[in-house]
Length: 402
Ligand code: AMP
Image (cartoon, rainbow, N blue to C red):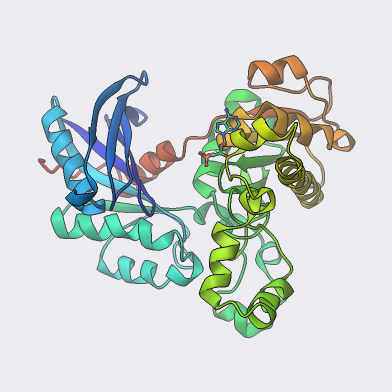
């Protein structure tokens, strides 16, 4: 029997999954990927093979009360029907916040779950959804090894100075510090830099993870030395619906003058800001690009996004002491030709020159000339979770029939 592991990435109404074969001595090999969306309402299931062909699809009505638990049990039974000589060995989870305690992936037990629950206030919109499937698996598949893999852990290489806020010491002692996020994505990019250009693996690189969530990471010799996200996933760049860095005074204005409750202010900053808030149209870059030529609000939102990225890259180049390479990744970074061109146009001072044809063609290298180089590298957070899960289990694949 070939042991397989499921990688789960749970959101408020979605459950994305990938299934990997874990053959001895070989890298985890993707077999199936898919998702459940609309959970709690009119849920939809879709699974594809590695060529992208849809293997199966299903929809449930809003009366079916099909939530995360039903989705997980449906996935396990779908696997059982399609396993063809495979058996489920473990489940790896994406967990956004590991706090100070979890600087590496960890095998889940009750104490770990308690510690992760204590971090909910640090990532209120993500952490509860990440923890839900962990609890469901513990209840419904007792004994199934589960590994939690953290978006924060990759940044634990940062210096104390890079991680400090200029706040009173007692706040630092309560865990108020910069953590950084998107670490699974940066871990993947760091692991493949050598395949694109060996000089990058040992050089000074800024990675721009530009998706619905967005951040930048400065890599020196492949490890994180600085990043734009801080204590929560709100800091740094403007995002699809999140504000990015704002003056803390704005929050007091919202509470005192606008009379918003903390929960209302939080909702504004997490879900009504960013590209959506500035444009008043959409958080989706494709929609904004399609309107930008004729709609000043769409154009303003994009211009602010690009301006902030370019400025923040300048800050990370200072932290790195120079720039050897810039990498674009995630939904916008991998697909939006115009964002890449506009960011690079603002970085001529850092030695970057756009290769327009390569950028339009979606080539991996999109810069020309002998200065710093620019790249497009698709991220693969799920593969990192699969690798980390296997390394935590130490190759001793605990097999469990499903
Ligand atoms: P992610 O969170 O990584 O899935 O990225 C989501 C973001 O990527 C959204 O803003 C999408 O509009 C954007 N995106 C995806 N595909 C494209 C595309 N072909 N062109 C421009 N933006 C895209």
